[in-house]
Length: 256
Image (cartoon, rainbow, N blue to C red; front, side):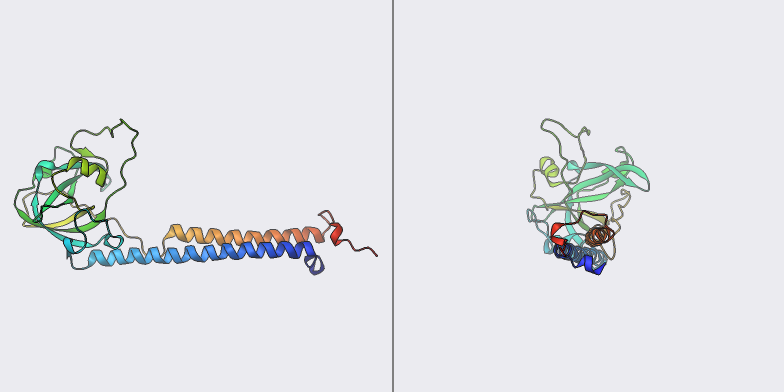
């Protein structure tokens, strides 16, 4: 078996297989590092969500690109509600029921506005959706990036009634709210001071994933498996050649 493995063609193939397996092993290690980094990022977001809130102006301002490290940061924003421009975000679940997010602009002292998800309602007719009072309030909540815009063909709509949108996305909001510069993200409200009577049900934050990011971890395992399959393939060829199951190469035939 060893003499068969030392034949030139199998040594050459082994070199190629080892080279490919090394590349796959490095790719797997890179994906493992990504899994660790993404897991650490999720843990950082959890810590940020539990930390003392920061003024929103210290994290992001209107028209600024949303910072990657601002996801899930707990912020406060002071201003007044613009209840006339309320929007309902359709298709949002809470406790296994489908309903709507109540989305309002909170107009800040500098004239810019922060999109705020005030809470969840089961029906557009829920009276708590219209309890925003035009007075100075301070909102505390979790900062989130704009959701991906819905990809619609030209001339088509999302089919929702007026006053409803499918996503909390900047393209949609810029089409509805033109009076104020907008923060490129939104706040999921946790509390408001002073409180204003009945309010929509609080939207819980999305559960963070801890430890490794499973998608990158699965990619790492796949690369390592491919590397192992390459080595197994080489060994099977050598074994079959040793057993005489493969055609004999002229280069490997020794003339007495």
